[in-house]
Amino acid sequence: MRTGMIGLGKMGANMTRRLIEKGHEVVGFDLGAEAREAVAKYGAATADTLESLVGQLEAPRVAWVMVPAGEATTKTVDRLGELMSEGDVVIDGGNSNYKDSKPMEASLAKRGIHFVDAGTSGGIWGLANGYCLMVGGSKEAVSIAEPIFLALAPDGGYAHVGPAGAGHFVKMVHNGIEYGLMEAYAEGFEIMSAASEFDLDLHEIASIWRYGSVVRSWLLELTERALSPGSGFEQVEPYVVDSGEGRWTVNEAVDRGVPAYVIAASLYRRFESQQDASFADRLVAALRNQFGGHAVKTDETGAPVEPHPGP
Image 1 (cartoon, rainbow, N blue to C red):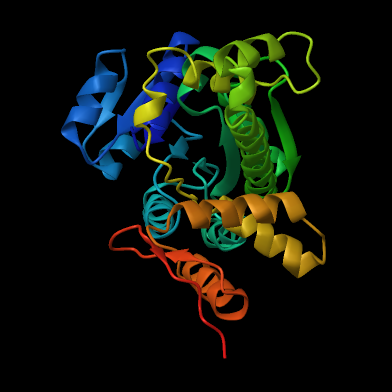
Image 2 (spheres, rainbow, N blue to C red):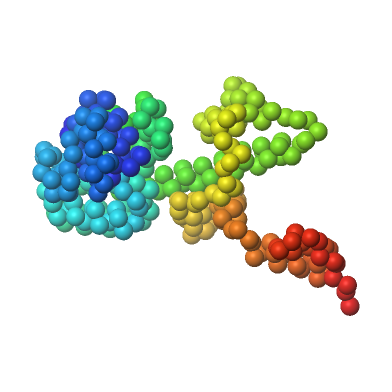
């Protein structure tokens, strides 16, 4: 197939390369000339406008949008709706909120254009390993674009999970689970790092857990890489960004009355990591000083403050 790829960042560029390696043709568009030039080296045609991209595709045209979620995606899809024709397909493959899918589908449907939402997992490793694809949309729309999905995904890594919105919904929950798994590994290894009397080799432990262990996973493989000598782990700042899907997952759990203790706790832990000085922790320390006379440390010197004398 000949596909348009809009957004040539790390994911979009690697997806373009994988499609070309699998025998497909790709027309790539990005606002940055350097990004366009980079994919051209791998055999992609390029376009410096959306009009040019659409003009280089053949009916039924398929355009994959891989730009930041929210306004950037909505504006891009709206513009494609103006440029494309009946029977064409627009795929939103970014980390969009699933609630945005239905309005975009309805807007495109007015012109007879299909909409597909593709939850895409694989990160920077997708080029070599393939991308897990959770796809939502009508059967007709998905069938038109299916050769692309099969090329991008590893064997068994693609499914049409439901109507428009279902793909991003499943990907949202996937990312919520990811939050919890990462936090569990992080806490476990921190406990072991605190066990100074055993002088544990955490890299070695991560390595052996990859074979036969009940907790083996790809995230554990990445843990082993992160803890390997010379990886620069010691220089990593303990600041963890939340990209939004963890919040959406927790909000959905609340709205649907589903208990999600682990995912919620892992999200809050990320919030905590983003605070240079936690007001809540400071207040808890002050309260302990007030009611129990427990010593606290000052921000300025780090020296202990005398316990509150009491009444």
